[in-house]
Length: 552
Image 1: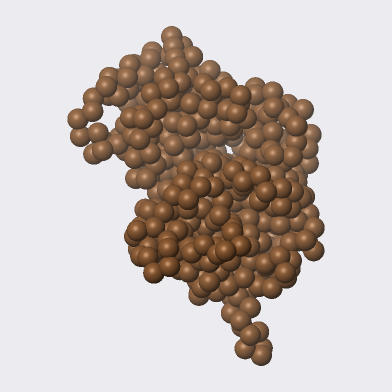
Image 2: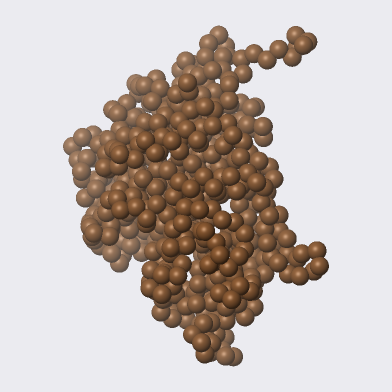
């Protein structure tokens, strides 16, 4: 080999490690909330997530995105999406480990937390396939509004068997669920939907309309919003209602579910996102007429939690790549990780990632407790909207800085950082963009005083532990009493709520080095406008060492 082709000073690939056990924040978190017994099985999933073959599945699923087949070779309409085999491998692992259903199947007081942790671990392999996994998980509480439909579909959705392909549900070993809410004229403003539903004599309905962003169209069943109208009545005079729409009808025939096209997206390319058209599509009403948003809201709450999990997972993956690179790459006479300025960048990224993960764990624990604890339910109501807004907003900025830590390698498609960067904005858009979630916080503040009380109680648990946190909480309390131009200030208010909540959690549960760095920068005001601007005096070395994945 020519001497010019001698490869030196290139870090080894980040493979062959336990994604779960290498994340001290996760390990400590599940123990804190009573789920330590799940560590062994989470570690098994973590080892699989760190294997080279799994990471290769993630690459292939994105390099060879799904293809739409609208008709077969004879011209018959089939509306099927073809995936690369790597997608099916990813799905097999996710479903086989219960990431779509374990929280409903297992009799465990920490089942939501364990499932959330597993979802975070496996999402670091590839983000796109998490969409049908998340929607299937979230569909279960919505289906329970109607006992007959729940009896028919929930057992199929709870199966740990991944069974792709469109066949009658009774012939499948397991099914997946999707959702169809948004339309081109309204997006998040679902009350402007124009899809209409007309009742049939047999109790079913016929849907006609066009959805704008329905992901994972190869799922077996969908929860869809439509306006119930009388024959000849206009959509704007209808009653927005939730419906169950199967792809295959009980008699084995195909329901009308015409996929007009697949979206050509910035990221999330492994996942098919479609525009389905309904024409006399058979549907079953789920919940009362005119209560569509109320019926589907629990599904939205669960998928919003998964957006927080997904963003926390992406940030953790970015920090892992950046710290691993800096640990092995030499420049200017030493390893990058030992350079003070680079170490401060890495420490800042690590603090942001740990804050996101710690908040995610708290929200998952609240989801476990909510059914039997009104206080936890109230905290979850506000904490989830705040967390969805803030954690998902921080993903793109962190991904950009972490990519820069790898230099040119980070910008090249051969490495995982480019894909992570493209994926980063997604969760801030799905399940309500930033403004939608900020307004949801205002709605909760105005209508649910118990939610604010529970939220402030959570902050108070750290009172007296850090003067900077105490000052931030006091300022927040004052701001919450000011209702002038509240909508204009909504983002600023929600940001401060998120930072105070993360600060409270870190002061109570994180190592002093992490908590001090967070409070000094995010709450104390000694922070610049870019990552890497932590104040002097923080223990950056300890923070980076904690965040760096340990590879055997």
